Length: 143
Image (cartoon, rainbow, N blue to C red; front, side, top):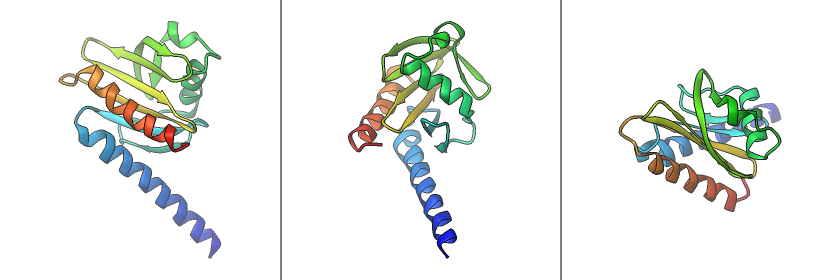
């Protein structure tokens, strides 16, 4: 019975994170793709078309924390998508661009990363604002 309870607990937690991605990010219509990953590379929730590998998450965390600067030169890789590195805020975030009308915003929280992409028709600052707002909320609550 405890094994079933643990599995249900994990599933419920995952469903809650997915609801946050769906309701707090995608429903704003300012984010095209979204994901929340643990700092260890574990996927908490995401849109089906944004699957990031644990190795990619580790590189992103290392860039944000200042442990690895190679992303500045080589760009940001999310799944199969590649973004030009635009800027970072030490210990907090990185931002990237792909072409002229799409990009990514990634914010580090206490325990994870909130990732959002935007495409044509969405202003970069609008996407960033939505991602940053959720990240700030999670930081305030220790997540």
